[in-house]
Image (cartoon, rainbow, N blue to C red; front, side, top):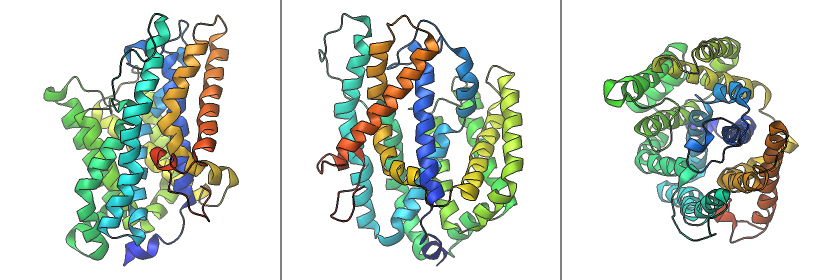
Length: 368
């Protein structure tokens, strides 16, 4: 039973990578505030003086920042299934995903949107109530994937040598298999981004889109298969990480020279190269205990849930100030992360708040 054997050890690299990915997501959202088109996205402030060069870095992240989180979520599902049956798994995932989604959509998002609406100075606080998932759309997608995929996953857990199990191992355990997997991502991008029926879609437009849903499903299934298949996938990435990183940079520079756009099939390849190289380097260098990541790992989920709230509070206070835009950007970054981590310190100590922000129910021997 390969799945049962290979997931016994704690994968510190995946925990660390989740922290890094969430941190980059927060940074990415703050850079939007300092782009000339920032106000076109509902819920985002826009500074009068732009810092457009920040997008050189954020544009690099754009094609893989969300896909890699879907892959990590698929890996998390494989780990979560380790000591649970189907009913226990659904209960645990509902508590960890569905409850924060409902709470965030009903309480946190309306609050952060009210703060955003106050930017004009004439909006009465809490004058309207409009619950919606906003940036928590990601959780909704994950929960849908779990509902439909869990029966298959538990079938594979009991029958790893079944035809579906052999196929997942094949695409995750050889270079040729990874090429086929990348082909699925290319096909999805060409159909849902590049075809005439979906010609107005954007590769980076993940939220509330068919492209985002099916691309996320592919990533979710791939993440599960990478854990399901054992160590071969990780050995391949460890040996090819440098080549994949070079390919990723070459495709990025091509996109950079074309105003951050490329044909969908090329962007799909670039996305895969970034993710695979990042997994390869994290597996090589981060798969060990680290005090900073051990602290931040349980904080990542609450930070994701609360970051837009604290970002909007920081923007409401600082955007009107006539100071250097980069100083302003730096202060917003600091206040956002500080607010998120301080709130985490409060949340993790209050038992009834923990599940509302995706933390496990506290036990006597568990402080995180």
